[in-house]
Image (cartoon, rainbow, N blue to C red; front, side, top):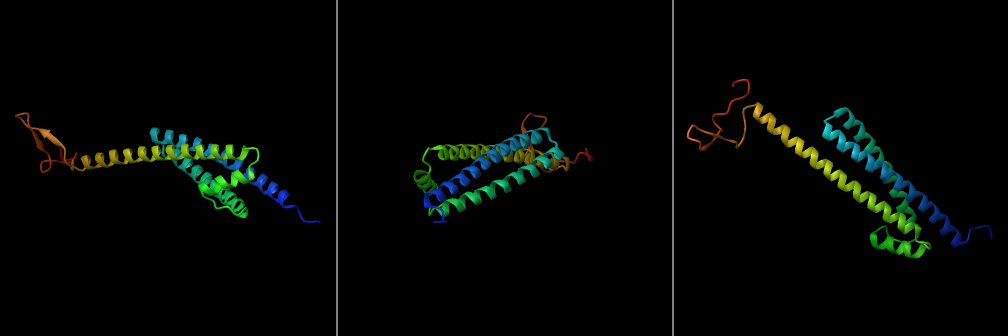
Length: 168
C-alpha cells in the first residue's frame, strides 16, 4: 500500500531523466560557445584567453560526463542498455509524448557540433604548430627541403649552404 506503483516509479525516473537531459543540453550549448571562444583565442593568438577558455571547456566536459553517467544509470534501471539500440528501445517504451526523444536528438546534434568545432580547433592548433616549427627551423638555419634559385635560374637545394639568421 505504501510503496509507489511501478508506473509512478517509471514516471518519476523519466522526470529525472528529462531534467538531466535538459541540463546536458544547456551544458552542451555552453560548450559550443566555449569552443567558439577557443577558436577566437587561437586565431587571435591570445594565450591567456586560450588558457581561460580551455579551463572552462574542461569544467563543462566534466559536468556533461556526470550528467551522462546519471542518464546511463536511469536507462539501465529500466533494464535497457545505454547504446543507440538500447536508447531507441528506452524511448519507445517510456517516452509517451515524444518529448524526450526530441530533446535527446537535440542533445546529440549539439554534441556533434561540439565535436566538429573541437576538430576544427585542433586543426588550427596543428597548423600553427607546423608554422612555428618551420619558423624555428629557418631561424636555426635548417630550412629543410626548401630550394633556392642559382644564378642560372635553376633551383638547387639549400641544405648545406643554409645559415642561421645570426650568421647571415
